[in-house]
Length: 141
Image (cartoon, rainbow, N blue to C red; front, side, top):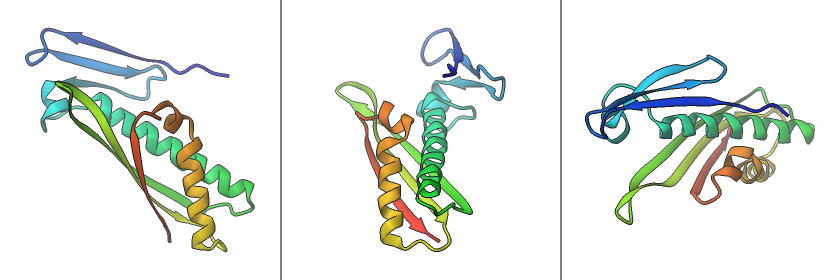
C-alpha cells in the first residue's frame, strides 16, 4: 500500500513565528501562523487539514459502502468542522462535526443512515481519530 507524506516547518516562537505546510504530492503548500490557528488570520492550520482529510475519507467510504450494497450514489458532499478548545491547560481537538448530503437513487432513509454510520465508524481517518467525539448529521437528498 502507498504511504502518504506531508512536511511542515516552523520558524520563530509561538505567537510571532510562522510556518509552512506542504503535501507530499505537491497538491498543496501554504503558510500557517498562531493567528491562522487560534484566531481568524489568513492561512491554514493543522485542524483545517484534518477536517479536509476527514470529509474526503468519509465521503469515499460512504460512496464505497453504498456502491457495494448496489446503490451507487450520484454525489456525496461532506462538510467537516474540527473543534479546537482548551483542555487541561492546553489545546485539544474536542469534537468533529460531519454533515453530509448524498444523492442516492432508490435508497430509503433508514438504509442510508446505516451506511452513513458505517462510514463514520470505518473510514481510516475516523479510525485514526477514534479518541475524538464525532457527530454525524446525514441527509439523503
